[in-house]
Amino acid sequence: MNREELTFSLRKLLLSPDGPAFAHIVRTTPWQDVVEALEPHATKAVATLLLELPADLRAELFSHLEQDRQDELLRLMPRDTVVQLFEQMPADDRADLFNRLSEEARAQILPALAKVERDDILKLAAYPEGTVGSVTTSDYASVAPELAVAEALAALRAGAPDKETIYVVYVLDAERRLLGTVSLRDLVLARPDARVSDLMKPEPVYARAEWPRAQAAELIRRYDLLALPVVNGGQRMIGIVTVDDAMDIEKEADATQLARFGGTAALGGPDLDVIASPFKQMYKVRVFWLAILTFFGVLTSTFVAQQEEILASVIVLAAFIAPIVDMGGNTGSQAATLVIRAMALGELKVKWRDVWFIVRRELPVAAALGISIAVLEVILAYFAKGVGWDVLAVVGLAMLLCTALGGIIGALLPFAARRIGTDPATLSSPLITSLMDLLGVFIYFALAYAFLGHLLVEGAGG
Image 1 (cartoon, rainbow, N blue to C red):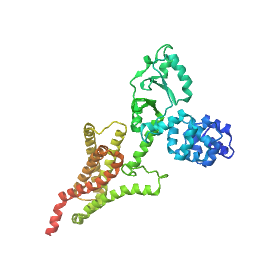
Image 2 (spheres, rainbow, N blue to C red):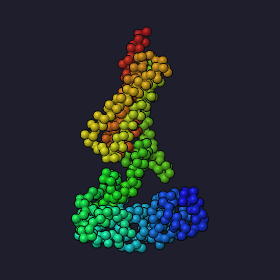
Image 3 (tube, one colour):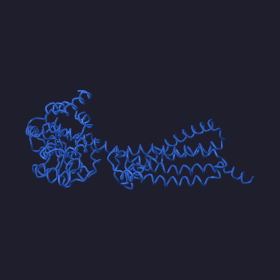
Image 4 (cartoon, helix red, strand yellow):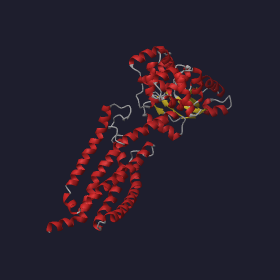
């Protein structure tokens, strides 16, 4: 079914709900397409259609909806249906949903759940947002080390329908401490009488529940894992973080860094959402950085205003101020972006070894860029404005120094930000622009006085 057919079919079902027909669409169509097709329609109509689905299918589709849509649907669904959702949803999704409920709603839901599900929700919901524990699911497959392969496969076969993944099986002792892992492939290919303890890989990679969740995503990427086991402070396994969860974490992290690099998050504050953020937050966060940029801008303009004497003598100098200072900021932003990306991938740490590596790497590149752009600027200035060689020397050298210095500063600022405990993307872009504006005019006019200062003396003598 293509998207046009899906859109037409869902529009028809929303007007005249048909449970079996909708269930067939959900079972045979990628959930991403179903969610996208339902997005423009009213929540009340979607709720009516969801109620026509079997409980397990309804929970699967519901877990893939956007959080705002989920919250709206919960307010429209009967209590029994909401309880069924909590019973059928993946453990990590229902813990997130539970955390968003009001105290009154939680008090209504919890007593209706079985003790095992209730304890699981409370355990996972207790971990703070942003930690590995908050994205952990308890729907994982485990076996005891003393089991024979035939026994382990029988246990997996019985419990597989309730697990999020069984491709990697975790070997736990009686206290649920993580001993190792064994792949489903190894179990299937092994002799039936072989022991799990003989097949397992000991000392697996794991994450602690209290770690930042980005660390779990980094481990999954680095070791190419389908799922990452998560343990608590007592070394007991509480669940797994799956590769699809890691992809969601990194997608959100990318969006966060983009927002912060654009100066739309206060230090340590929340990121802006152009749709969901209230006016007060939008204003407060954005004015913070604009005020800082204004302060630097006033310093820069004040310094330029003090150069009235040399600008009056060589008026053409004013035409080159903007491109020279802008080039420093642009080069710095390029370098900072590359360093921040390497930090996000775990390739760079806040160590002197990595700092010196970046300096040695960026310095020749920044110098080459500076020379190239300076030559281009001199050629264009000569043919476009017909200025003398003394002015061209000032412009060319200023462009060279600003471009090279911008690259070095841009490469080092993320290290400085990480060193003081701030997200590198939050500081880098606004500070690079402001610093290079200020340094650019210092460099430019210092060179102007060095090469053209004799004009002021001659003018004073005349």
